[in-house]
Image (cartoon, rainbow, N blue to C red):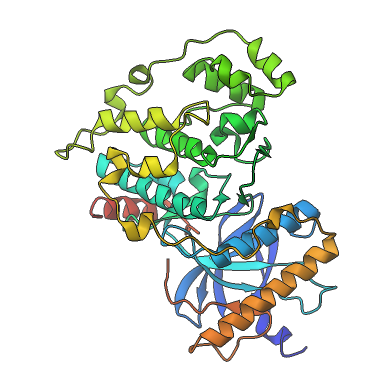
Length: 411
């Protein structure tokens, strides 16, 4: 066994085998999805608990490889308090021929927004959580990046109300009139332009997802629970009404014919859709009121993307602007080194080489800039050596109770 091999050990985690650096101990499954399995672990070098994500079959096909590269690049380049931090990247395989597994080490949070949605949130906490989501999105949009997969399980929080956005495997840079593909974004949070496969150059599709998330926080149930993309569209128009002829004329002919042949729906009034009793009680603050929350919802949940509120406008909405801090909302945009990274087409072997080379560059930068690099670091260990502890930890009933209690005290 070589020196590099001796730095790794294997452990069975559910149905998957994790082969990780020995610095990561006490692995415990905390989540899984289409893009990977996540464990909590103790980083014995930094002395903190972290999240270790094993990407799911990154080289199964070109699409998986492209997503792995995209997530690595964006996590490396983005530095914002409301975006999850990448602490380390490693692979146990030494050669390009063996290269099959990629592990990302990130901050560990206390819970996902899925759990928080079911808590008894008042206007202050709801508004502050939404503000942080919008700050994170604003930071991405400032670099021309659309997340494309915003949903409660991709947003994590700590007990002090700190919120971070994660999972960038579907994120991409915006280019003029790109085609919206229906497979992006979990169905319930898909914007109409995605459902209908529209060509559109603006970045407001993420705002639709935020509107769906906000509605879920208020109603404590999914607003548009479609069974498939056709049923999803039906759910949208039954609630929001049939879109204008102007909107339909921008659709592709086959889609336009389908949409125009649907029954006409007048839509549900927002006061009826979101009655006063589903909201928290009004506060003494003149901006954190039910009427303002409902108004923000009405501006995000707009079928026509040309009429939907932008992230900048949402941050300046009275319900959100009470928290406005220029250092958070207007942070300098991330410097993305490969603006067209998702447009590149490579073979699997080429993607392997690109990912391996990119990882080596990160490794060299980390070693050159860190004064606390561990003696156990290797070419396979790509660590930023961050000491900030913060994906969501295992949330059993006791931890949820603790999180709820602490959220009540967060400022």
